[in-house]
Image (cartoon, rainbow, N blue to C red; front, side):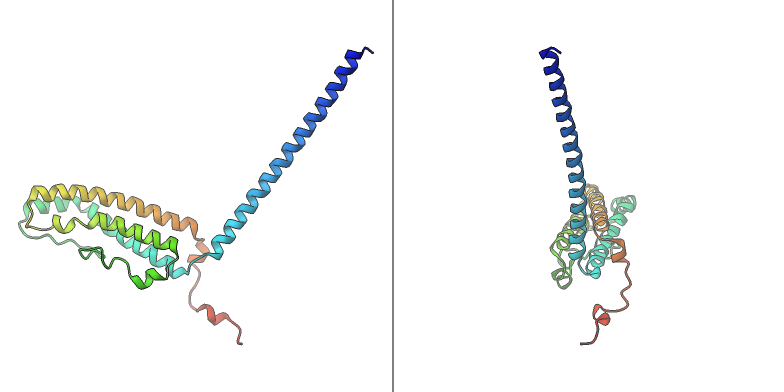
Amino acid sequence: MDAPIIIAIAVGIVNLLALGFVGWQTYLTRKSVQLSEANLRESQQARVISNLPRAYSIIHVQNCLEGWKKDLESLIDNEKKLREMVRTSDADIKINTRHWFGQAKGLIHKVSYDHLPDWLKEILTTGAQYYYEGMCLMDTVCSSREKKEFRLDLLEGTIERAKQGVTHMNEMLAFIDQLIPKWYLESPVSLNDSDFWDKE
């Protein structure tokens, strides 16, 4: 055999070995990534479970968001009726809301707020901001002291803010639903935790 043929065969064998080595490395890397992803998922789940706030804290925040959202949805649903009332009535207009008392103060109960974890505090105050933005001009819209054209313009802007608030509150509620396991929120609460402890 000629030397060039022997060299070519040797180079081919070395290339095959290198290719095999690269393939084996790729396989090991893929396995390593899969194991890392599995470990990351497990650690995230463990962290979520260990940091779960009390169920009543979550339910409290959900109830606030749901209540504020209903008020904003009612405002949106009654837009035509409100517009007609502003056009035709010379008296103040009354609107039915469960949570709006004409100011931001009182939307969040301080005692409940103080017991929330930081991330739920952020969600609650953000929801309150959107609710306030959607409702804050309604006192002026409903006041007969202002000009009707001005009130109608304010109503249009208020409805847009209310729609934005509803959209974002839906996103906040979906975020909580994704983060908190359903089994945790729906667990029976007929007894306190301490009722399950053995006697000392």
